[in-house]
Image (cartoon, rainbow, N blue to C red; front, side, top):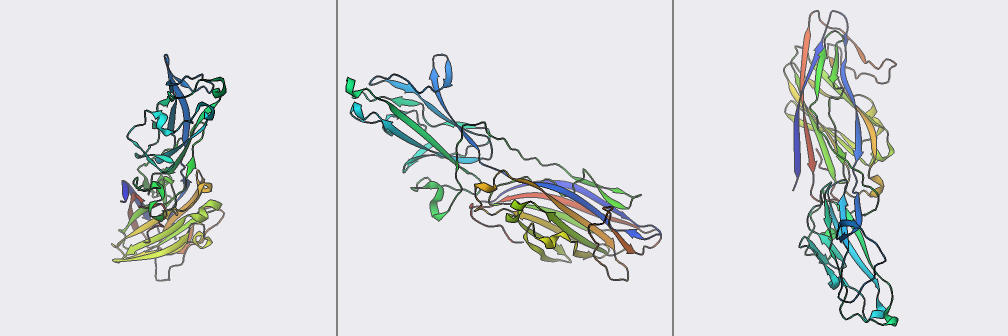
Length: 387
């Protein structure tokens, strides 16, 4: 099932014209794009008379004795599913080794399939869960000098992102049911890395003196948030030409981080009642660096620009916890009898000018609205949705 989260942000863009040549108005923003990670921590604790403390390895035991040993799993990053493998060694001299039947305090939230215990709930960021509460030493363990020896219970924990996952806990391998392949992250003992996502309302205001589009804050799109494999994020920009002149709209994107060549970009424009995909490919494709006309709006006409980024679900751990910047620019110019030409990029001043004649006293207003949508798809290996 798709999960959606939307935040509506109001945007107003004003274009003015004087008796001199008109400026090409533009807004630009540098977005920080990042990937999330699964980051879990395993602690081994013991319940003592004075509370819970860290586990101590060397403990003298007797037959029938109950030993407190609590494997606690904590999640410090993206929501995830966890599983645990319990391994036993030693104790052969006592007549039999320990096994899972000697564990106690396993809650109904865990189910055993194959060699693993699977936690049936999503372990959310900041939460923790205990696998079991302790070990019962068999009463039939022999107490002889020859039976004196070491024993060990080792716990190994794995995690997989919860997004796009629908485990089947009746299957022998709940995480890979239906032939699905998932990226599994092992638990570590260090402090976890915390991540968070925020959404803010964005507003673009007018500077009539400068005849440019100004954003406050300087971000006309908004934060894309943190991507996990399989995520698709979309920004919708509603465009409306309230001027008495036709307007040509141009757009460009520039991204240079090497890992971003795995991210897909789709730019879709709806104008004059027709929807069409104008760009589709890798975010880092060099062709996106130059301004490209996305639509022409007649006086009173409206349109919509959809910017979609997606991260393939099959990406491995080497693409986790990455971050980098991408530049997005949108500009508009006033059309005259002369055919509109796309503005050039890369001039020294950073301002794009079009040598277009403007009628005296003409004032234009271009209003826009941005709708932030986060879409997550079913299935970690599925690609993004086109269009």
